[in-house]
Image (cartoon, rainbow, N blue to C red; front, top):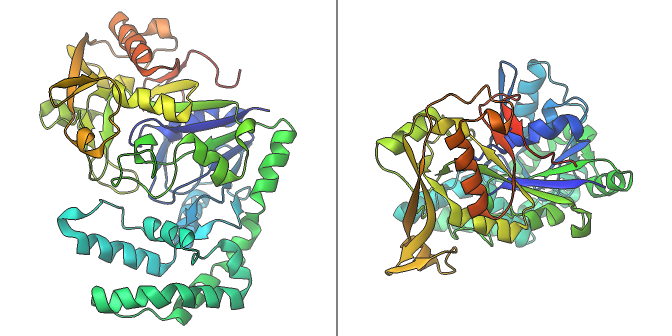
Length: 428
């Protein structure tokens, strides 16, 4: 009964799409369990590059059933745009399943997201402006719109009207915007109903039955551990739970069903948006990491902030997720540096701190304490085994493994599907 969770162990953008796609041929179901179209994956298959924003990476593997779970928030216009793009490139998307309990991102959620960020000014969170946060807020406030609501026009109308009662007060009286007509929103949402219907399913039942039949199910998180609403660098976080526990609630599968939890680590560190980032670089090294690593957000198009590897964060991710393995990505980007600093601890108020500080204030003032490891100049994209790597690259990987608290079972040595070294099988 192999159920695996695959998630980001930093601030997201670690290369989860590549890792998911690597496992795709051996996996029966790939499930997105949280987030929305604010989390992008880039997957390279042969000479083709695919940018996925909402769809599970398993959509590119014909034998795999891709699933959007109940914990995801779905913008139907983005969903169909993405499906159309894949269909035009010859990808079969007919096996996609979407939970009827997943919440819909409405046009008013997007409006509220954008005007709120502008209103906050310098205090803005750095959201993508895609309505993700307001949709999750509606869900918690019990005024959200679920996909199943599209098939009862009376209920849909009542829910939209209830949601807009407060939002229109905010839009008109606080933000000086026009009120939104409930009828127009209902009409827009109903326009997606027929096309969505073939994909809608009781995915909780489907996934639990699959596990009972010894099918392999991979749960794919968006964003990363440090963006988790409960365990991340709050308030500079996403509005859902990318950590391993989110897979259970976001897909309706009990924790006793999970057999392995894989954390994706980039060989350095990046993040998008506002918030503290102890190892961030503002020099030529940071520019080089950004350029060589192609560090631009798949969904946002924003340049990513770049810094050296942070072992404190990796240890934290191991703890809060119960990680059993790491998949280390983008090791090839570090080729060419004579020396590579690694953050092993922080200095806070003159004291050495080995673990992620509990206090937001302390983390904001944390200064990285580095150890320097020797670099390598030899290209590694052709490496097929760990022994094929230069000795210094091997030593770097082993050092990161020792510092992070879980074994590194796979290494990405290039962007391609086949440019990966597998040390231990994730499915064994």
